[in-house]
Length: 186
Image (cartoon, rainbow, N blue to C red; front, side, top):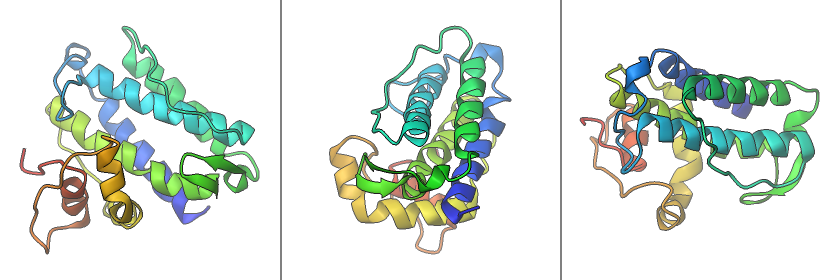
């Protein structure tokens, strides 16, 4: 298993651990993402993961689209999670090459970028639903290395907020949250 696949899978299961514990009456709770409730956040992440699944299976670029998760956001998430893990489990899947979101690359390289989405949104969902968030430090460190060089571009694309200052000696997850515009003390 590649390091990128391991980190992505860890981030997916981290998000899953939070999603599985969301009470039915909390899917409309506000998240730290302006204008998004928990249901919206799951829909966004499912759209990103569905695009990744399509690219993994076909080698053709797919842009994320936000699906309607309806009255069963957890059920929609469960299907999306299972689909992407099944697609990535196929022999040679991570070696699939294509002109994906950031230009020519392999699925393995794309996973290095995508891992930050479930990592960040697991924290957002936990905050929205009164859960304790547990971000994986290794995944956070990897995500920082991948997105920090392109942070200005990601901010211009409205994919993350302005940085939040955190202590220089903070752990990787705290630094990741600050980099992506999340206040770890919120």
